Length: 529
Image (tube, rainbow, N blue to C red; front, top):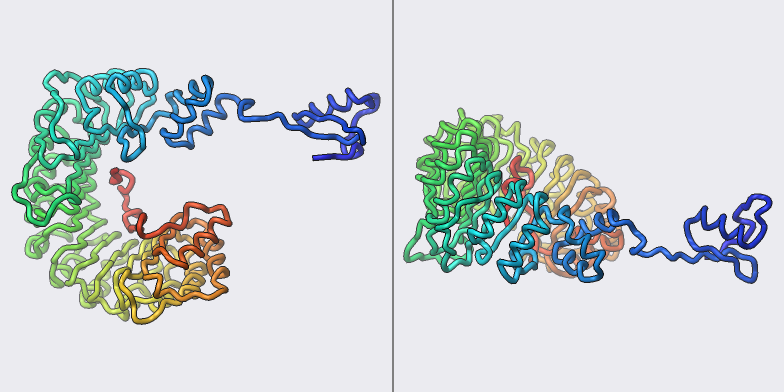
């Protein structure tokens, strides 16, 4: 860059070449010289090597640990910075998750001593690294470790824990990925005395690996003993465990008086037979998630819903009758979150009874995915009355709910943060997406997550669609995730957002789905990997 000499004022008496160059260097912090035409020439010699260590450390904090390890190979200085314990507060050593692979136990023990230390707060360990030596080292060298994930899911046999005498004692969060066939009670007996401070417990089963017909079900963890060792639990997530039944829910409710959230999603043996006792004992229970369970209507109707404190309820994928659903939604006094998708019994009569009871006055999230027995007319009436208070609205998976209904209800969804619409089934008609995008942009300024599941072949848009996308992008400034089926319209929207330097907003349904769970009060504590 050139600058005429008259554009930079120099004090009297400093007319010499050297004086003028010195003043410019002081003012501009760069190398400046004069060429033969007496013009200032700026030559910046600044590089990343000139940055102080604390700035490089801050830059490294935005990188993944795999990338930080690569940076450590650049030079000795960067290696020192990369090994700063501040960068290693949350560590995953599962290669399939983080890409990090620890070659030997000796290497891990050295990392615990040198790299992790007192800064470590969260760690994920795969089965090959879960040994009594490693756990001893974590207990002694990482006094501030409060969150731990132990992945036994691929285990065919466990290490010997007979000599284990120590375990991290300040854990508040623990996630255990269970094996299908390995009994873990020998390991669990060793840690019971150290986990009485746990507040959040995740037991993750093998739901995705299970076949429809199981020959034999193994109870690989003794839940009845575990509940005695964890009296302070607030959040319990039992996900996809094929041996969990109502007796295990009864065991936890009998001992965990602080229980706020219980999730038993995809635990197919749960029928609700102990639901009445659960609601009677757990006075602080606000969130109850039972997606994909085998709930029986007679058990659900026996529960005293009118006396409970439940505010968030997921009963999706169950076989509850219309009578049971009406009984439930008209008795829960402060229901703010309801997920009731994929239920044949959820029909117009349920929504009508709910509206007439006035019990939907606290509702902020409604998920009715694939509820084919609800008419668009009744949905329009319900959303028309309560849409202004909704933060999440999921009306996907229904072929009769098209852009016409959404165009009608969107002006009422002024506070919505999450919206899911469309179905993957091929429709007979077309979805005019330009008009829909324009309406979303003008009606939903608080929108953060949006998913359109319609088949790309059903989406109709014009050459002027960029204007509607611009409207959505500018008006919905908080939008952080927009999911579309892969196709021409997806490419158009993605290119538009990328030109505005919002690279991570637009995604495909093959790798991302939007859920109403984001508005759950315990959402952050329910996340597991």
